[in-house]
Image (cartoon, rainbow, N blue to C red; front, side, top):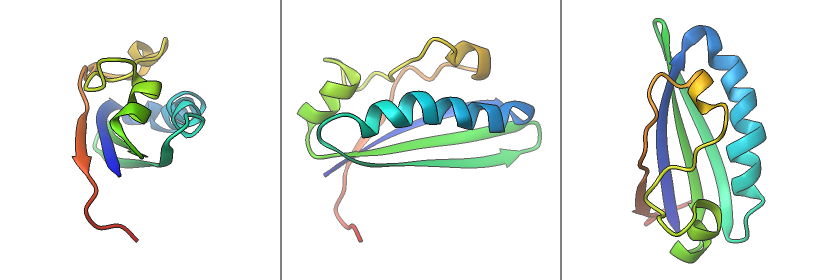
Length: 101
C-alpha cells in the first residue's frame, strides 16, 4: 500500500469552509477512484493559519494515476483552491506503508 501526502494552508477563518470544500472535491474523488484504500484529513490551527494534511492510501501507483493523472507526484488541483489556499503546493509525497492496523 502507498500513502500519498499533501499539505495546504488556509487562513484560520476559512478552515471550516475549506474542510467542507475538500470533502466535496478531493475526498470524494479519491474515495471514488478504484484502488483507493481510504483517506484521512488532518488539521492544525496555528494562530491565523490552518494547516491541512491530506493522506490518501492506494493499492498501487497505477491506482494513484487514475486519481492524479500520469504525473503522480503532482498535486491534484481544484477550481477554488486559489480562493482558500495561501500557497498552492504543487507536489505531493508518496510513502510505502510498512505497518498498518
